[in-house]
Image (cartoon, rainbow, N blue to C red):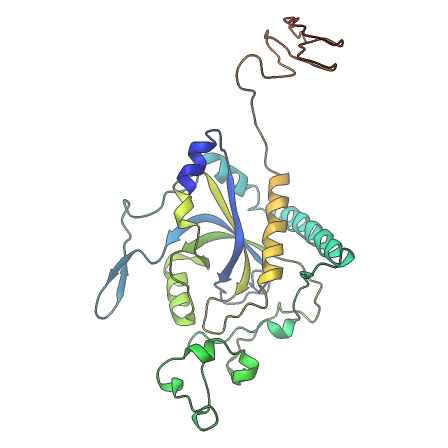
Length: 313
């Protein structure tokens, strides 16, 4: 699909892949702490499920031929503007402004989805080794505690399943307010055809490749067309994931995309000699303001008058 897009639009300079993803939370520094509803932007993409499965481990292919290339100079220059506190802050403010506008419009128009931010109580990060499974065999009749989880447990919320709150990771950013806006992270994004639902594997890959998020579409587009991945974090890529944050995370990604495009310098140039309405070199100018097949006139009828104009400073 990405290759067909490039064939159809030969002048394509930038494609943005927006959606939702699973976050890879770090140690939890107050400034850089990642929470649900934040947004990640790709600096590079790592295909994490391309490799060889051995009896005792999975070995990812990591040669130059197997790795996805880096983004082009224009995209790298654009992302470099957000490395500073000022640039990142401006992007986050633009994202927050768009997000508020869409939320207000959704309420005003009584849309079925209001895109409200879930309360902080719905943002729970468990220790990576603590698995989402039935806790009491006598009550549930399920022995998934010895097998690492089951489908029924995956469809059940942590509250209903009774996940032990003592295994929660202590953090600062899940504030006591529901009005905080997305923070934006830029870094390596892992992409593959496999859904990441293991906190232990998430952390190992994140530490090995400095990964900030996991998603499933970027690898197929990255080497085909110039692109940036913009994804809202809707879960922590572990067994406790659910869909409660997806609407808000999708809105956060869309808002960040619009804010990013507002800062993107568009350099579209007219094609051919007779296709522009204002040129800085001698060329036919076509300006129609009347009716009929006209060129550079204000009357009606089949007229064709072309003037060559040269602009002097």
